[in-house]
Every structure is written in C-alpha cells, then in structure tokens.
Length: 281
Image (tube, rainbow, N blue to C red; front, side):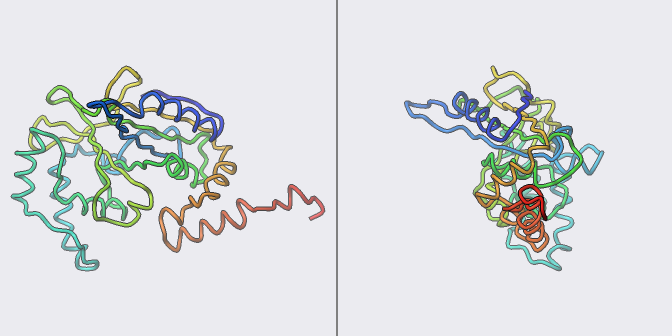
C-alpha cells in the first residue's frame, strides 16, 4: 500500500485521475476495457483496513465457521423479519467450500445476498465495503466529526490486466460484483465488497489485508493507495458533497440520518454564516 498526503478535495481528485489514467483500463483482444476500481473512506487515518469481524472479534475465523454462524442465527432473525433469500443446506455449503471455493476461489458464494443483509444491518462481517464513487467514499470519511487529525480515502484496483493469479495457499483478495438482491443501501452507496482469505484447506481461513497489499505500482493485481486528508477540510468537503446530494440521509435513509443531514444543512453548514458576514449579530 502506498500512502499519499493531499491538502484538499480537489488535490485528491487530481491524484485519483492521474492514477486512473495509468491503471484505469487495459487492452484485451483489441478492445479497451475498464478495470475494477473501488474506494473506501475511513474517519480516522490511523485505522487499519479491517473488516468489522476483525475489529469485533480477536479469534481466528474461517469462512466455514462464519457461514455456520450466519445459518445458526437465521431462524431468530426470521422470527421478527422474514427474509426473501434462499437458505442453502449445510451439505450444499460444505460442498461449495470443498469443490469450488478451495480449488477455484470464492465465486458464487452461497447466501451472498443474506450475508450482505447482515452486513448492512450491523452484524460483524468478513466483508470490507467499498464504493465505485470517490465522492461517496469521501463522504463516509468526513460525515463523522471526530477528534482525528486526518481522514483517509482508500483506492483499490483488483487487477490492471483483467486476470488474477498467485501461488496456492497465499492470501488473496476477492472483489464481489454488485448484481445481488439485498438491502437498498447497497445500490444507493454504489457498493462493492472484498474478502481476504486463503485456500490452504476447505474451511477457507480468513486473512489480513496487510499480507496481500503492497506499495509497489509494479504489481499487476491488488493495488492499494491510501490518501490522507486533513480533518480541517471537513466543512469545505461536506459543502461540495451535499451540493450533489451526497449526505448521510441520501446514502443511508433513516430517521436518525435525516436528523444528521438537517443539522448539517441548517446549522453546521449554513448557506449564510451570520457570525462571519454580519458581525453586528
């Protein structure tokens, strides 16, 4: 991972545009194709790139253990909130882990839509969530007004030539697609998700991102940049984002986030700052 300090949102966009001009597309069979590029905002630049499962639990997890946990709590959830997702059997899940995930990678994951439902409702998840929008990622970095001196926006490129490879047993990252039936916030946030794992055995142990990403731009896959932005830019950045309707409520509709957005509109980011422009008041 390469760290880049920027002073303003405009400088951030310039840096991203420069990287996209270099790594944003690849040629295949005579055609130019876009690479998968995603962004993630974090409210404190000191925070590591971790899933909520990593941040919540100190135990070593495997994908099989997590899928069994998700299956175990499902009847309780459905007692209150019926779920419109299919429920594969334990045998189907074990067969997928053994015959597909271990030899080929994490494709066609059983209960993927249900796992995203859990993630969007606050249950600790092995997925790290991203967005295809730099603006949305920056919003998630700056909506929260905390004591951090700097915020961070990550930029991840899955592969720059259309294919991924590696040695058997090495940690790897899988970037999931967006075509899935799940919570509507997934689409409002233009969301994507990654999971870090290895295939040393059919339980699919989960891994740390730090074992995969590197600061070298000579790599052809798993490129990651971390942009560090001073928190003092918060007001300017939020004004820019809210002018294009990126707010807590637009990305995560709820009564609580409506109140947060109204506070930003009416008091934290007023159109006319009386204290600044009208000293008599």
